[in-house]
Length: 217
Image 1 (cartoon, rainbow, N blue to C red):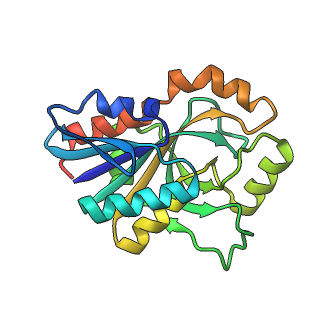
Image 2 (cartoon, rainbow, N blue to C red):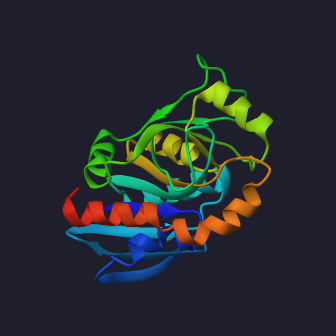
């Protein structure tokens, strides 16, 4: 089984549209899930993983209940690397937490699944590969953005990927996070998110759905 997660419903729509047939609708920890097929793959979709604590909690419960081979997290993020622009698709190759006193030699990073990274590149070769930094804070200042980039060299920042990556690593589950840039982490971030989110949010999960249509994992 492959579990696909997201923070908000809009971020999982790209995969939900390809979930045929739907075999089951249910609820886990008050979050809705849908189980079905994408291509020849059995897939479970669930959203509502907000922040590091909820993301880690949900990841562990999903692993305990469904024992997936792969867990893929999709959604939106803010740019940290100045080279990144609105609409860029970023696949995390490593995941770090930026809000726990980052020190390169003492803070763990968690590696993405080589299989998932290769399959994603096969589907969308404009994907940008690099580090995703996660923390329980909304980044909307140049100073904070520059600090995080200096400490982590991350391409983008979110509130969830590193927590899920950590849980997956502890459980031996292959993981990958695929995100789309919807803001640049500056003072105008809220305006950018309102302008870009609904339009761009479904794209990462649509890429994953296309990957599952083409490949049996």
